[in-house]
View 1: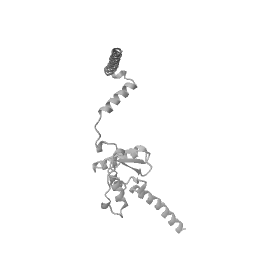
View 2 (view 1 turned 30 degrees about the vertical axis):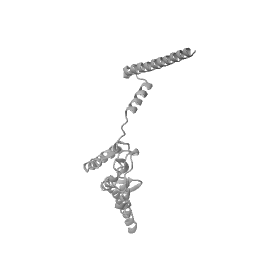
View 3 (view 1 turned 180 degrees about the vertical axis):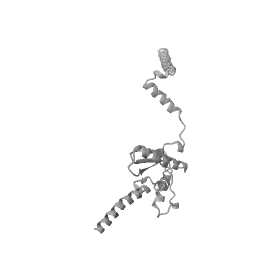
View 4 (view 1 turned 135 degrees about the vertical axis):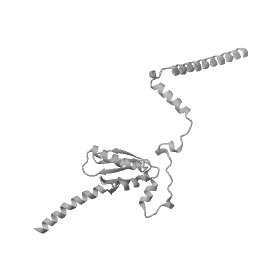
Length: 202
């Protein structure tokens, strides 16, 4: 009886090992078949398997500067160097190393092509001053400037408001009048003063 039980256990182990080996061999054959498959014949499951293998093999963590901005740790703001009477200085420090978007309005009544031409000149001048920006025309007279380092936005603002075709610059919800806006205001004031003089003469 004991021999029969022992024989049964040995047969069971052999069958288990055999079936396990067979399954592994089938899996190996399937993976080899999958590896030999032409890339043009891949289906979604094959692409997902390839992606999982890629992710499993990628054990290296990205360095801090390679991470997307939203995963990076925000830069430390040294409050001791900030003047409490200068809120702009605090904003500048808080935006250091962060992406910032600002808008500029082209004065007059320009077409989108004209706005593109004018803002292209501004963009070139900023590039020559070593300020990296990306420029997008978002309307007939509206241009978006995107800066990788937000602390440079106030330098860009100072440059733009001096340009004769710039009516307004907006940063973080704050608007700043440009040289183009002053011309507009002067034109409005001149007709009003002329009207007042005519009324006085009558």
